[in-house]
Amino acid sequence: MKIAVASENGMVAEHFGHCEGFVIFETEDNQIVKSEVVANPGHRPGFLPNFLSDMGVNIIISGGMGGGAIEIFNEENIEVIVGARGKAQAAAENYMNDSLKSTSSVCHEHRYHDECGE
Image 1: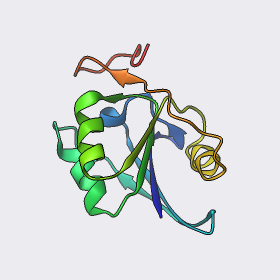
Image 2 (image 1 turned 30 degrees about the vertical axis):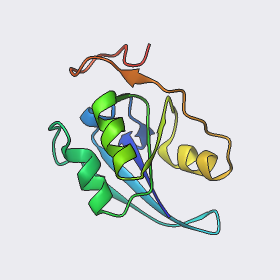
Image 3 (image 1 turned 90 degrees about the vertical axis):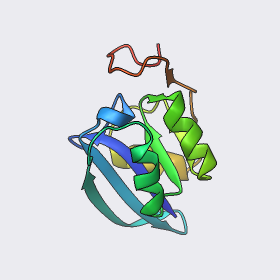
């Protein structure tokens, strides 16, 4: 399984589309076996969900995310977890331990806001 965490300096990013990059964790038997950081190739409507899908990602974790991106992830059968905070690796581990739940923190405007999801 591959878990992608939208990140800024190793922390969960507040907004998916404007993150610095993605920490991709490969897991086996609920353990992280490999991780890599992939730079965000740029925010364009609809692009990032397909980019991550092409990488084989099964779960995306972020602080907040727009409804359009969530819809595309759903179409690609990628689970979306929003409302996460803290260290990217801790978020992935919490997901695997079933202690990270989505808050449904959806950004309703397409431009970046610090208040995303509130």
